[in-house]
Length: 142
Image (cartoon, rainbow, N blue to C red; front, side):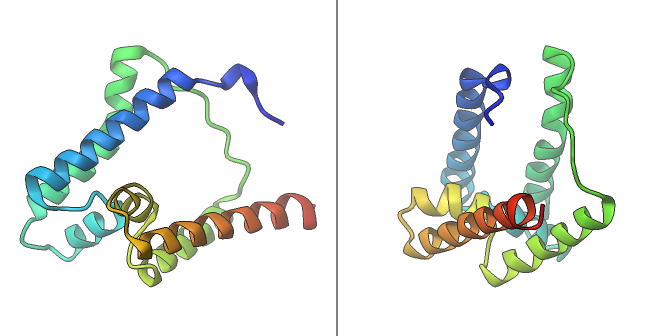
């Protein structure tokens, strides 16, 4: 069921453009890929470029707060999972990003833009795993 009342093509387009601009700026100005798992991993490991990594991650965290100041209330979010389910999901995503040598932002946004075959395979794998997970949890086990 599609919630047509929540369909926001212009806001989605603006968000996509901002993500693309940020990824392009990071790549062109600093030679870095805007993959969140890689940026965050290097921040934890205290990589030499940790100030850049910290600034990027801070921007990702602070962006919703700036949006709220400029626009008003954030859209309501309803999470239909328990804390243990969320913790398990986060752990599985973390393990997956290590095996895939990157996350959806690194492979899906930056890697596909660079026409990387490895990123294409990784992104297709992410998507397939997501499709199967949703089907199993919402249809097969429901």
